[in-house]
Length: 234
Image (cartoon, rainbow, N blue to C red):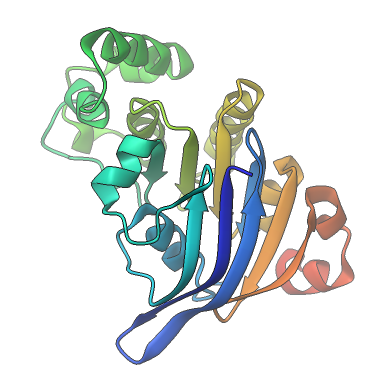
């Protein structure tokens, strides 16, 4: 297993945002986590990346307990997150944003990362010298994804990559995610768009009120009447 979570809990003040979460993820897998707003999906990713502390439970990454490690140590181990809302550094250029993502790798790896980013999203190459804040929402999502990849992650955490994007841009982002999966990147995808996420996932989990309530193959969950009724409007 690449990632194992057991009995994980976290809270904001008195509010218990995660309550005994458990899941497993294999190397090379594309795992989707779906659920309504406020279900705890983003909190789980923040806890995996170390930004949000765990109060109970355990997180193991490549058979190593990382539950109490700092976010920087987790990045060094190979975990990178693309945050909800993209959160690019607006005043910095597109290329400087990318280089910040590769601060832990050597010069050769940074050059390789830039080349890969520009090949994956040619618009970033065209706009490399412009402030990131001048990009459209879709272009900023491409930049945020490419910035995370600069760290050469063994586990990529994606938080709501389709949020606020036009359908044609959502399709482009999801094609990029599928290409990364085919290239061997392990991806933990959090999405409100259950149809899109489960449609490309090897396996999926459904979260409600801080707990995992369903799990199964991506296509299996798409066919589940409970998922259809709650998340697909069918």
